[in-house]
Amino acid sequence: IGMPRVPEILAPRRRSRQINVGKVKVGGDAPVSVQSMTTTKTHDINGTLQQIAELTASGCEIVRVACPTDKDAEALKIIAMKSQIPVIADIHFQPKYVFEAIDAGCGAVRVNPGNIRKFDDKVGEIARAAKDAGVSLRIGVNAGSLDPRLLQKYGKATAEALVESAVWEASLFEEHDFHDFKISVKHNDPVVMVKAYRMLAERGEWPLHLGVTEAGPAFQGTIKSATAFGILLSEGIGDTIRVSLSAPPAEEVKVGHQILQSLNLRERTLEIVSCPSCGRAQVDVYTLAEDVTAGLEGMTVPLRVAVMGCVVNGPGEARDADLGVASGNGKGQIFVKGEVIKTVPEDEIVATLIAEANRLADEMGPD
Ligand code: SF4
Image (tube, rainbow, N blue to C red; front, top):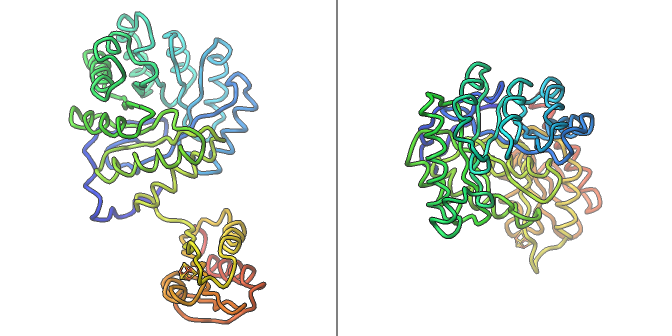
C-alpha cells in the first residue's frame, strides 16, 4: 500500500500506537487499512475461503469472520492458514473461543468484553496467550451490546457510555501490561459515533478501528459511513475502517477504498468525472458514464476520465482529466492529456474512450 501525501486540508494524523494484525500494520504511520467481514457460516470452510478470496481480490486488507459455535472455532485453523490476508476472529460471549482463535493463527481477535460474562477473570489469561502468540486484539464496543451496567448508568448507548466502556475495558488489559489492541466504539448514528471516537481519541494512543454499525442497505450505509469517516479521518482520527452494509461484503471494500481515495489517503485509481447532466446535455450522460465505468471496471491505474454532456463545462473538465469527452451535436470531442485528439460520432464515444484508456494504462505500465 503506497502512502500518498496527506493534503494540508486534513489535520495531521493523530498519534497512535502501532499494532500488527498479522502482516498488516495498524496505527502509527501505517496507511489506513480497509477491512470487511465474511457473511458465510465460518464452519463452511470452502465457502468462507472463497469469499475471502473475492474480498482479497476487491482490495480487502484484513478480514473478520464470526465465531459463534464450536464448529466455527474449529474451522479457524484452516481458514487462517489458507487466507491471503490476516483473519480476525470475532468472538462474543465465549472466552474459550478467544484461546482457540489465538492457537489457530488468527492475526487478531475481536472481543466485546461487555458481552462476556465473568470476562474480568479471563483478561489476564487472554493477555498472556495473545502476547505469547504475537496476536493483537480489538476491543469492540458496540451500541447494540453495551455492558448492561453502563446502559443502566447512562440510560442508553450515548457516546459517553461507549467511551467509558472502551476505556474501562482497555484498562483491564493494560493492568496486565498488554497494549497490542485497537478499539472501536460503534454506533448506528453517525453523529453519536463521531462524538464517541473524538472523545476516545483524546483519552489515549490506542489505534482506532472506525465503523458505523448497522449502517443499513448500500445507499444509506455508504452515505452514513462516508459522512462519519470523512469527518473523523479529516481530523486525523482512524487507523483502519470497516464500512458495514447490508450488501455483499465486496461492496463494503469498494466503498472503503473510495472513501480513502476521496480524502487522498489512498492513491486514486480510476476516477470517472461525469457531469450530472442538465437541460443543455446533448447526449445521454448517465448511459455514457455507466458504459464507460463498466468498460473500465478493474482498471487500477490512476486515470481520471471525464464524461461531460455538452460544451459548457465539457472541454474544461475533459482537458483537465487524463482523458475525456465533451459531447455535442451527435459527436464527441475526445481529449487526451489536454489535447483534442479526434472527434467521433456519438455511438463511438464509449469504445473510443475505452480504447484510449487502455492505451494510456499500458503507457503508464503495471501498477
Ligand atoms: Fe449540463 Fe453541460 Fe454541465 Fe453537463 S457539462 S451539467 S450537460 S452544462
